[in-house]
Amino acid sequence: MKKGIFKKILATVMTVAVMGSILPSGTADVVKASDTAVKSVTANHVYSEVLPGGTNIEYLYTVPSNGYFYITLTPNYYTEDGETSSSTSWWIPYTLKSKSNYKQYESGSAHYRNGTYQSENYCFAKGTTISFTTSSSSSSDYNWYYTIEFHQVKPSNYEVEGNGERKKASKIKKANKTY
Image (cartoon, rainbow, N blue to C red):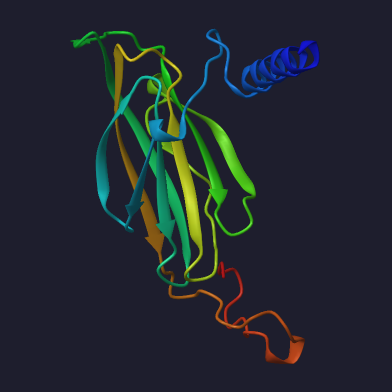
């Protein structure tokens, strides 16, 4: 009888220990997967967004053609408890990653007082999906308003060969011209 009670107590203690190790503590700042909205976006379209406090928005951009792209993010204003703030000292954190290899290319913050943030120019193969995520760790009393655009550029002098063989390389026809 004592052995059966000991086993039940031990099983209960082990269950509590395991559950306690996988559940977040009450003081942890945890963003749940359900707090991330995922949106597919297209090239050269302006999106006006609202980012509620404590959430993320992940933009999925599939490169539509040869050329390069860059992203602009313009913080417009924010509200606290429904009231527009006059503060100029705020920002929207972001990250830029490839969905194919999960490599992070940029991470930083778009600051209101700096105006529009513009990413570097990126050139990926047609069909590659890029993830650009904006985030807010503030409380749900805040809403962050901004516009975002994925600019796709197809220059006429874009290289078309695959860089695999020197004898098949694209020829440079004019000096002092960027290719």
